[in-house]
Image (cartoon, rainbow, N blue to C red):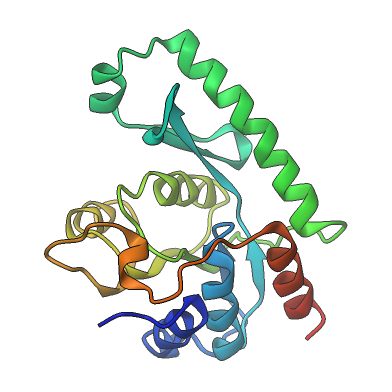
Length: 213
């Protein structure tokens, strides 16, 4: 099975989350940028509020595609000790990487949300949505950041993920909903026919459309 695009994936994912539909204690939070088109379909189908929840990958200098961890709003930082050790990254260097990414976090929050205040999470069920998970570092950072706001429940919902990542996340959040856990995962984009980049304008358009609905 492959998804046509992120919207299609979101529609299928929403069907698996139908028990949350129409509840006033549920919010959907999208990880930018690829998670926003997926989350938009989920929120629309469930008739729940949608917000963006920025997180940033912390990449190895010179090999930024390799994640040593991720960080979320409020200074939350999640790292992979094995990758940190293999890349021989010291604490000072890790702090410098995090400082750069924190600026991008603030930029994204201002750009995507504008003047809208963030949604209240305390006591609510939070559904964190992305377009897929490989290592899951960014989702872990999002889950920690969300949990700090004392929600009633944290649910991770994604169309596709590595089986090992889903297994690990189930120990860290209240529930994981994942449509596909391929034995040979490869990469998130391999499970989409159209996995084109999502730019800032599309994120803003989808969020503004939902806010005005």
